[in-house]
Amino acid sequence: MIPNQSAEEASTGVFPAVAHEQDSWTEASNQLLRLMMDKVNRVFLGKNEVVSSVFAALLAGGHVLLEDVPGVGKTLLVRAIARVMGGEFRRIQFTSDMLPADVVGGLIWDGKRGELVFRQGPIAANVVLADEINRTPPRTQSALLEAMEERSVTSDGETMLLPQPFMLLATQNPLRDDGTYPLPEAQLDRFMMRLSVGYPSVEDEIAMLESGAQRLQPEQLRPVIIPEEWLRMQRDAQSVHVHTALLAYAVKIAGATRIAAELSLGASPRATRDWVRAAQATAYMEGRRFVVPDDLKAVAEPVLAHRLIVRDEAAAAGLQVGDLLHRLIAAEPVPVPAGESSRRRR
Image 1 (spheres, rainbow, N blue to C red):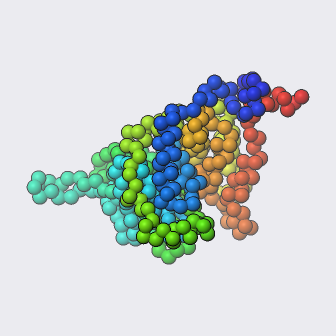
Image 2 (cartoon, rainbow, N blue to C red):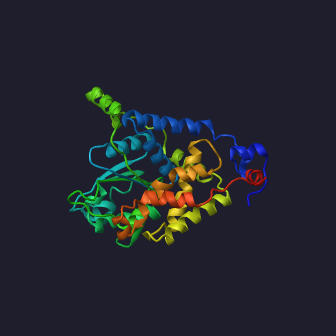
């Protein structure tokens, strides 16, 4: 049971453990976030919600998978985000003939030294674009597993830490495209969010055509922050308070996916952790020091859906994983403040 609180707090749905901390985050941080997103939205027209979701995932310390048909601007979006982030940016164009060493690096012969030296691969950067990640075989895809989880790479028995912050943004086309390989479940589980860009609206597509050669390009954007500032913002976002009742709510829904008859694979504990962190980042972006149920609901599908596998018979019957997830969330009662609960019993 959530402790008692005032009627005013109950009516606003504020959890009592942090009701006295309703003051907003520092104005400087909020201004930086707004400026960064505004700059990206000037390049990537009409997709404010997608941009906001990507920033929430990156603030939470996660990685993002952008999945959609070719030509909708997935790579453009990542390039714009990388520019406003500052730090070092690398792009890896995945192809069918790439090897793991092409990603993480390896030993090469240094003629001047007369010895083998390690040369870092393109994965060693603050913001890495893994473009068309599903066009490379699983062996090369697996080279990213350690980097995504441990923020390090191992080559020839030597482990090296990656720069901090480290953010991987990957794009992929639908699997029905020729020459694509499905991402393994272990790798999908390491992406905090999977997002779909979608086609632009009629107005935005006309505006894009009208701008022509004068259209603002990502390379014209100036960095807004430095990596150290982004690390501080990530720490602030992860310090957002989450009430125990909301943690239990998230765990119950994750548990429901593991026993659902329609699913052969449910949400992992990593998925639950990512869900809570994404909700914390969402609250942070709203200027709050605490998470409310709507924060969890807002990021549930992009965080959880790509980790769930529908059984063949359920898929044949037309079941969509997003619909099932929404049904499981709707079946679990939302935690309410104690004051609100007592009023309902009268």
